[in-house]
Image 1 (cartoon, rainbow, N blue to C red):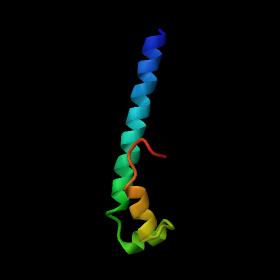
Image 2: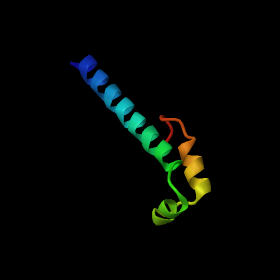
Image 3: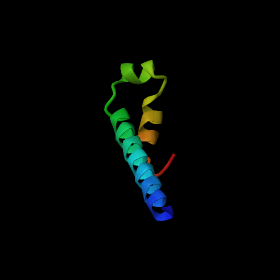
Length: 56
């Protein structure tokens, strides 16, 4: 049971990381108005978009 739980948690962390990476990359596609609407500058979006999926 312990191995199954470990595998389940590992899978969830990987899926969350991949989702985080995808949304970070989407920040790079937003125009200035959309970034302004969510309170980010272009520099902040670039900084966040360049992070690896395992980084928080």
